[in-house]
Amino acid sequence: MANPLKLGNMNLMQIGCTHSLGDYFVGYHPHLNWLEITFITGGAGTIVTNGVSSSVTRGDLYISFPGDVHAIFSDNESPLKFSFLALWPDEEELQKELEQIMVLNNDPSQRIISNENIEKLIENSISEVILNDKYSNEMLICCLNQIVRYIIRDFSLSGKSKKLKISSAQELCYRITNYISTHIYTMNSLESLAEYFGYSYGYLSGIYHKTTGESLINCYTSRRAEAAKALINEELLSFAEIAEILKYSSVYSFSRAFKNHFGITPSAYKKQLKA
Image (cartoon, rainbow, N blue to C red):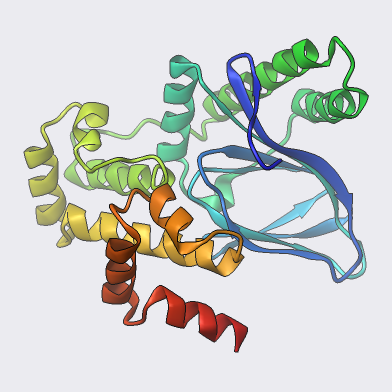
């Protein structure tokens, strides 16, 4: 979908299904501010997220987070078939619960779950989009809300969302890094970390540098540059649009930051892709 479909308290970004050939693949692409569920309906394949490969087969539900860069590859002998659905809630309480899951489960190898209820709800959602009658929007709202809540419940009950000891400096820094990675498209500034973690920015900045040897600014700058590179690789957005999405003040500041990080301008990098 070119624009999110607003459905009550939910935003539906993408939905559909595909039947692949043996050599089929979905190229590397970034996720903006949405949660995506890939439901494997047949065959086998590999999903590579942020450089980590996970084998998937029929019945697997693979959860992708905002800020991820991933690709999907089909097995040649058992062609992959899958349905997909991308969404994000407007409801603040649901956002907080999803953000907690994202921060605590940044390891892509831990993103596969199994839930027949979610499988059926994805199938129902696709059917309602196709049917598109006077009841479809209400049906979709119900389906999407249930999907989000089943995901939250599954991660909580399965022990995937183990609580970290926030008193530990290493664990706090781990959570900060993961938060930046999963909110790279929505953070307006690093100061927002203070509100989320309940510490002053000065404290977070100091403990992060002391513990990791890297400044928070460098961490944020690096993640933002990598996100920009992924968006350029997709070749769908202009430099101005990328600058806007990643909250750069201008195309010039975006270009300068990109060159400082990679040693090459965005324009020169894009030319290399086509060479």
